[in-house]
Image (tube, rainbow, N blue to C red):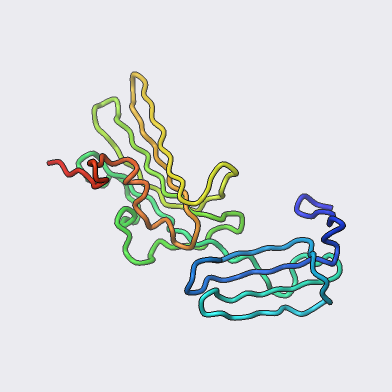
Amino acid sequence: MDAKSRKCPIFANWGCFTANNTEGDHVIYGNTFNKGCSIFERSDDATECNDHKLFGRACKRQTSTSMGNPGGLERPLQQCYVCNETFDHAGNRIDKGPGNCFNLVGDEHLEECDSTEDSCETAMIMDWLHDGSQAFHLTRKCHKLRQTESDGDTNCYEGQNSYIQFKDCYNICTGNGCNNNSDVFNANSRLDDNGDLIEIR
């Protein structure tokens, strides 16, 4: 028995199942993938799929013995925007990347993630350097949710020493292409009493 297999409990020993769902017009279920021990009595069946406009396409398969992942049911791969861009305090780009990461243009940076990654991350790394200049580095990428994280989490960490002052902010989200948002920027921005961005010149 490998690290990804388990002995089925007595209340779920009818067989092994694999099932997935692709997102429909309604986002209640999204893209999901499940496999494990089944609590339902069911004969060995070929893959059974049903299409629903709101809830998407759902496919199920069950066998009375260990099954691995037959029938072409695969985990839907997470899709995230994957890019990075660095600016100085005057808004000038100081990297040689492809650009258009801060201001995304269409889906040019949308990529399929590794099968182990189930979420997306947007990170802002900000430094006030020893020479007095400030730098801002933005990264959008695929991410693997930790046990302490959930959809929509935004956290910032800051500190300083005699050479540098830093502030790093991270936003985690689930759902295809969800890291096209500006939540991580808003977490770092100064807001007025109404929650609106304060503009200064």
